[in-house]
Length: 420
Image 1 (cartoon, rainbow, N blue to C red):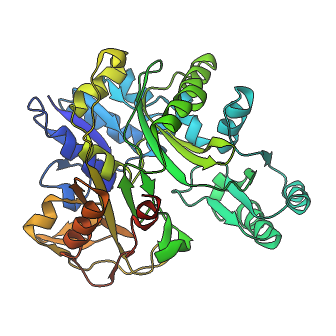
Image 2 (cartoon, rainbow, N blue to C red):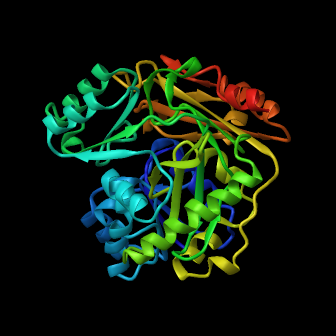
C-alpha cells in the first residue's frame, strides 16, 4: 500500500514512523517532508499548500491513501481535491476544517450549541474592538480569526497590551488577512489540557491526553511558540473530567458539525481549560497537534493506518483504539532566537540511540549532511513507566542532539510533576 503524507514537520515524522509499523505499507511519499525523515519516506519537493501540484503527483504515482496533517492545506481543501480524483484521505474537508480556519466560526458554533467556552465578542472594525477592550477587565485574550502558524493568540495582561494587540492585528496586519477580524475573549484560568481525538463524523475516540508548553522560556516566560515540549498523559485530566468532556464537549461538537452540514472526519483537537466552573474549550484544531502528536502516537498500541481508514470509512465504532499505560515526554530542541529571528544552516548530529527517539522538524539535507532550516528543529520523545522517568530519559536523549545555537527549555513536565 502506498501512502501520501502532506506536511513537513515533527508531527508528520511521528505520523510516518507510526504508519511504518503496518506491514502493508510499502511506499510513503512525504510532501514536502524534510531531510530528517528522508530515510523513512520519499520526500517530494512540492509545497504543502500547492494543491494543484499535490493532485498532479497523486495522479502520476500509485497513491492508495493520503494523510493530510497541516492546517493550511486542510482549510484550502486538499482533502476535497484528492477525493475528487479518487484518493481516500485522513482529514476533514474544507467545510469542516473551518472549525480551525476561523476562530469566529468556532466560537459562534459553541455559542449556538451550548458548548462551554470563554465569553467573547468578534470584531472586524478596529475602533469597535478598542471600545470593547476598554469596557472589559484585563487580562484579555486577543485572537486573530484566521490561521497564524499557532502564534495568533495573545494573552494580554493589561488593557494597553490588548489595545496594542488589536491594533497590530487589524491596522498593522501583523498576521496578514488572518488578523483582519479578531476575537476578544475573557481570560480563563486553570490547567490546560490537549486532547486529540479520532472521529468518523459520528463516533469520537479520544487519544491519551497531553500537556503542551507554549512559551519559549523556562517557567512559562517569553513569547508563545508552536510548542517547546509535551508530556502525556496529563495528570490534571482525570477519568471523571474525561467523561464530562465527552458528554458536554466532544460529542456535542461532532453533532453540531453534522447538524451544520459540515461532518468532521479525521483528527479533531480539543484545547481545553479546566476552570473552576468545569472544562471549557479554548480552541479547536482540525488536525494532529505539534508537538502533542510526538508523545501521543508513540503511546498508541493499535494500528494507526487501520484507525485512520476507519475514520474515512465510517467504521470507527467497531475499531480498536488502545493506548499504553506508560508516560511520555517530548523535548523540543530549537534554534536560538525562535520564535523570532534565528540563524539556519548548522549541521545537526545525534547519536544512533537519540535518532531512534527523535522526530525531525526544521532540517534539510545538503551534500549528505543534515542542516538546521527552521525554528523548532527536533523533538526527542521517551516513554517510561512513570512520568519522572520519561522526563529524565527524554532530556538524556535530547542532550545527544547537537547543533550550533541549539536551545531547549529545561522544565518540560515540571507543572505536571507538581500536579502529581
